[in-house]
Length: 132
Image 1 (tube, rainbow, N blue to C red):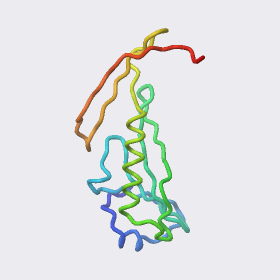
Image 2: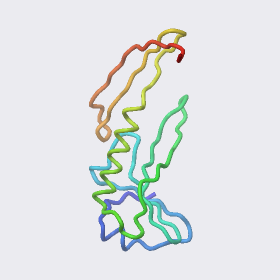
Image 3: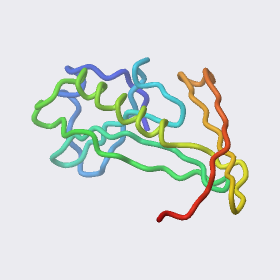
Image 4: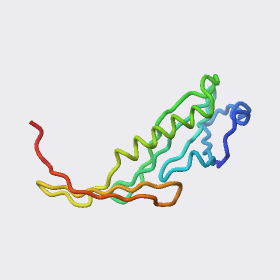
């Protein structure tokens, strides 16, 4: 997987290929912990994806979330990065690690990264109850 700083000209000049090829954006706006902006080029399409790497029981699981089709230039690269940032913030807001879960109380912890640097960490306890 190639690390390239995406530009509109570069995206338009990337040739289509019979085998899917993945390119990762190296622009500072697309650097978040465990997330990458990826362009997948196929036989007829160029599609922007958010690649989210989450760890479940110590094992890495990659998830691709489709953001936009870049083939027809319907949206600009700046708009694609805006969509990417919005989705990353949504994922990060909903992602918490369960430290301890009992029958009545759960202890959760969340971390926020800027690039590879930890900028915030929060933890809290929450009541666990049956939905009525």
